[in-house]
Image (cartoon, rainbow, N blue to C red):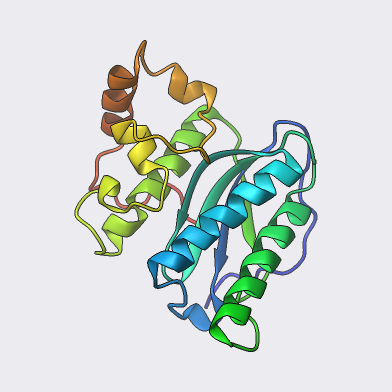
Length: 193
């Protein structure tokens, strides 16, 4: 039995940080082509500009998406996610001539309460394609923040959280510390499914 994603009151305040998950309708593998992933990143960029939130990590997968969003300007996670999901679904359905719901339910979110939970959620996101058997290591999945955090590959979507900055004096020391925080084989760091 899955988690019901019904409407519920969410805590919204400046600095509130959420681990957000949203899934394709019927768990279908709808996000398949490079174009689909790139378009999702473009929608994220446009929504960041419009709503002024910080994005600490992200990963679109074939049938779901994970984001870590910190509220800054617009203090309404529901409004932000509604815009992201609506824009992407409209584009996808229009481009592929598809009808019906793209997303299964409302998004699910978990308020991140401290730096340890933030790092755990970030690693959970980075390890998602590895656990799914889609790649051997997080940096092999090119549509996520893992390449930024582990290989220092430029990513205009990522807003580095303070806790990551504090892991080391330079990019290399931060990458090493981050990669050693949670081993690749740790079963579940944080769960949103």
